[in-house]
Length: 337
Image (cartoon, rainbow, N blue to C red; front, side, top):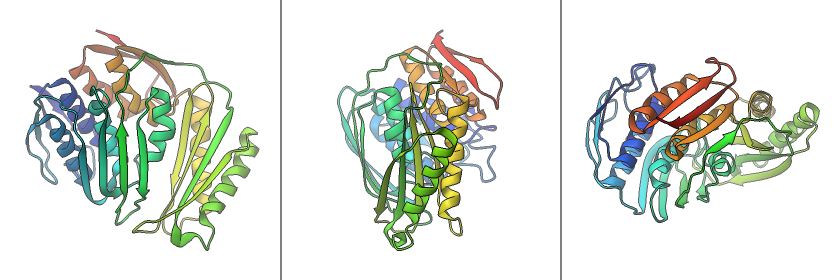
C-alpha cells in the first residue's frame, strides 16, 4: 500500500492520489488530510469525488466521512460505466471532475458523468468552462461538457452533464510563449442580474483593458443563466501556440468592473510569464506522466504543483525535473524512470 502524508498539502493532493489509485489499481493510505488548511480533513466535494471514483473501480474505502483526516482507498478493476455525482452544497464541480477525468479518460469506451448539485463557479477552483476551453484543447481531449444550469455560492444547485471520451495521450511540448492571436471573453451572470447589465459591464471593461494592454479585441460571449443563487463569473482565454486562461468570480458588493479587471490581470500574468498558465500546468501533470514524457513552460511553479508531482511519482514509473524556482516561471519536464 502506498503511504502518503498530506500535512503540507490541500485537497488536490488527495484527489490526485485517489484518481491514480483508481487508474493503476494500487491501494493508498493518506494521513493528515489537508493538514495545511485552516479547516483540515475531507470536505463535501472531496467526499463526492472519492465516492465517484470508488464507484468506477468498486473500491473499498475506509475513513470516508466529513472532516476525516485519514483515508484508505483499495481499488478493484476499473470499469467503464455512467455515474451520477450528487453535491448537496456549492462545492466545486470542476474539482470533482478534474479528479474523475484522470481515470475516466483512460477507459476503453465513453462514459457519461452527471452532476446533480454543486457549483460551476467558486473560489480557488476551475469552472467547467475553463476545462472545456483551456484544459481540453491542450490535451486534445474530445470530452464535452454541457452546463444545463449553473451553480453559485451559497446554494449551488448546478446541473452538468459530461460525455467523457477515451483520450489517447501524446507527449506535450509547450515551452515557447507565442504571440496572442485571439482572446475570447465569456461573461456569465444569473438571470436576475440582467436588468443591471452585469454580464455586459464585465465584458465591456475586459474588452477595453485587453485592447489597451495587448492590442487584441476579444470575441465576446454574453450569457445569462438560470441558477438557484445569484452570481457571476468571467473567463478569458487567449490562443497562441497554446491556450492560457484567466478568470474571476463575482461576489456580493464586488462591482462588475472589478471582476473584469481581476480576470484581465490574471490573464496578463499568465500570458506574460509562460506558455501554460499555472492552473492548467498543475492539471496537466498527471496526463504528462501517463503519456510517459513531456515538457511545459509554466507561468509560475506553485506549491500545488510540487505536491502534485510528489504524489504522481509514487504511482507511476516517471521522474519529474524542474528548471526554475518555486513562485517563479519555470519548465517542468517528465520522463520514464
